[in-house]
Image 1: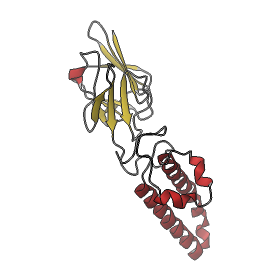
Image 2: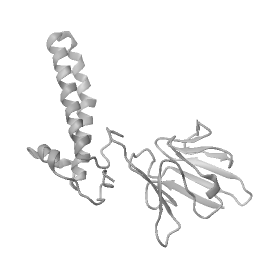
Image 3: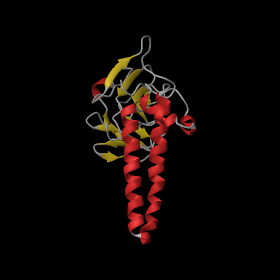
Length: 211
């Protein structure tokens, strides 16, 4: 039997370097038995799909080579590569192989405003600036609504996801500079984030969002 662990963490057999964070750290396990039987077990946050149907989490589900398997509904499995000791996924991905290793790495570039409520990863100055503009515009609209109709003061509850969005985006911009998200509490540091370049190389928080 061959077992292929799939996910973002580097100790998986199949490493998915997905900056969009749709793929989980330990997403799924594919098993190919000696008699040809194949099963896949989902252990992810965003699910694994077989022929468009989301399979049950934690349950080994039978699969065939004719099936279309998608990680997080986005990354397809290339069955022609399952016969070898390494497996690969194809699609809108860039494939690299580490020298001296039988592991495959798949990099899916991060799109702007993907996972805006996540505190993981990095964003560039443009996304950071637009995020702050979005926050300011929505906050202004909320305040205008309440000022013109005091009975609508319940709308202030929308500040909860709005503040979450802003803090998460600010945190990822701090990461782009190589700093913890707590740095956003420093007075006027937000202005520095607007103009300062991010680290050009990959850092401990993730890949350079500029590619």
